[in-house]
Image (cartoon, rainbow, N blue to C red):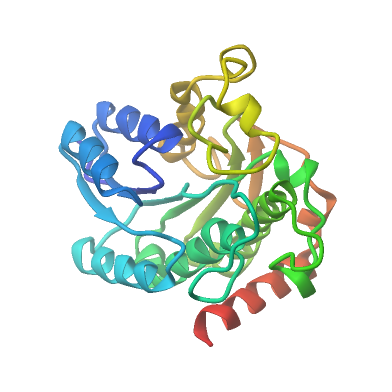
Length: 274
């Protein structure tokens, strides 16, 4: 049995749950974080794992989650920021942010920063579940992170997945010299409940029989996350990069703009501290 602690958000379903099963089978200590109490407790019970409930559309719940994790785990070896998804019509959270932006980027940004002291002392790996949507749909505008002007579910999701990659690169730049390793990845187009609540055309692929023809299984998608969590930074994969199919991959050209990454970080920090 490994003495490592691996925290996976969005682990009550889909690739998060699949990876949790795989890592537990490999002898790792996995901590399950999910939004649905019933689903989260079911996976945790199956794996005999610790579990925590947090809805990332409320930043107060993210802060509470971080406080509980810091008290429970003096060492965190892997933080997998896997929670997220594509939304429907534009919605603003109680915190005042567009929901796609908050759930996919701002909440994991806040969680990671709140856990930073322990992540640094643990020489942790921080993994971001991103997507090819960063390349296909994003037209990121730092002056309109909530997409008030040109909202569509796919654009908001693409922007958020690009933000995941920018966050990965900036986290590497700021903290890799203190021992943190970071990586973002696309798990593949996975046959899960993804897009079930959206008005995007993606729902016709993910929630009809088409998914069995066009999409991979959650187990296969989960293996991409498991490979990164089990791997050795600097040997298995390179910190600060974006991966597809276990290889560094091309993404949106904006992902390679260090000034953009820095400004996104600074703006996000202002949002969660204001």
